[in-house]
Length: 230
Length: 230
DNA sequence: CGACAATTTGAATCAGATCAAGGCCCGTGG
DNA sequence: CCACGGGCCTTGATCTGATTCAAATTGTCG
Image 1 (cartoon, rainbow over the protein chains, first blue to last red):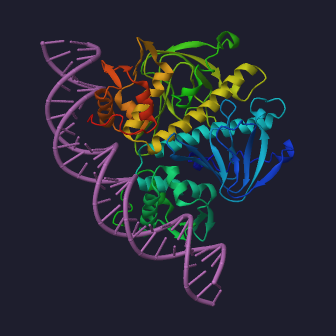
Image 2: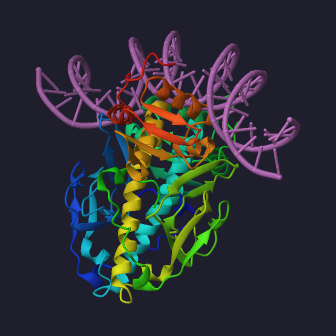
Image 3: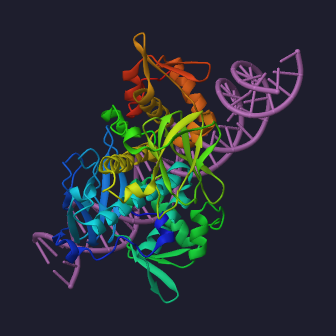
């Protein structure tokens, strides 16, 4: 689940297989602001996102929020640990999900195909989180923002006249809590990327990637493709 | 796998079940400095650590190293993504591991018990990595080091005359790359913790936790239990 | 004992956080 | 239709904590 930075390399998403009719699992909708589950709830179900975006968060002891991941269509959310959910999961847009009994994780016999899909999603999630570490540990603010945008572009970007475009469904504060910066720094960095012509941002929400190569290079830590734009 | 900060709450480790005779899997030893696997290798096997310590690392495009986790006895290492290992795994002490065919992940029929164990380990790893995020994202240097020490104490610490003691098997640089700091800052922070009587450190390797509560509070971000010790 | 690697300490620097203010967007109600 | 209000976004100025660069010390192993 989650915005998987490793998944850049592995599109299209293998977890987006048509499981609905195979399992008879119910598909239902979740409104913006509604919670799919909360940290500590007993985890009876897993969910695959069909439409919309979710935000997975955890709280520290002293009230700091960490955004663990964003859940986009195809992602599987709600992997339990010791039978409990270990994060809050809120819809940040009107969404639609498919629910599975968590027991399919243990039980391979009933639905081998489904079991394999869930297992694959779990393993991919581990890999995605390791990618997330790379970002949180040592990268500069530009590198973090560039990595985030680059991953989103690969994940949900749509071609538009030579360029790629996508929507930032989440507020700046969520992005900040995801990549380990403050809202202010995210803003400043976005304007910096705008000023040096790497991206264009319309209406706060819409991102157009003008120079994908530059964005990718910045994500990798290549300095100074952007200098002189403070 | 990995040094699971969440596992603080869940000792003793459920994955440390006796699987050897049940599976007939071969147990073998790995010398210090030897690699169990490398990033990009086809992932044919999983390993459960029996003795010793491993270090899981990944490299960024521009040569920065990130320590993903440390593998202690009981941890399961080598979860694949798309059939490949996604980190390097090096023994940092003489070690002993148990190998399992990776196919046990998919295949529940042959060894349901083993399958469940591996599945549980994978899910626990996801949770552990989420805990790791909390640290890398926003915590101060003291909080990071305190979290690291606290987790190790809970994981491998042994009671010693009112206190808890354990060995830091890894060099400072590894700790730094794990918690997202520099070697120098790790050092400084350790001396800070020493000076204010939270821990004692002998022979560079041996840590004695003198005030576990203070250590835990610092890990949670409680400021100023340590002030005046610069 | 001697050399090399790892650890520790010190001083200077810098990137991002913090604090504060202003601007924009959008819905609500006069 | 326009004025008002509140939330989110953006920008500016300052400050702080971690990094960087450099050097000294300790520990290790042949």
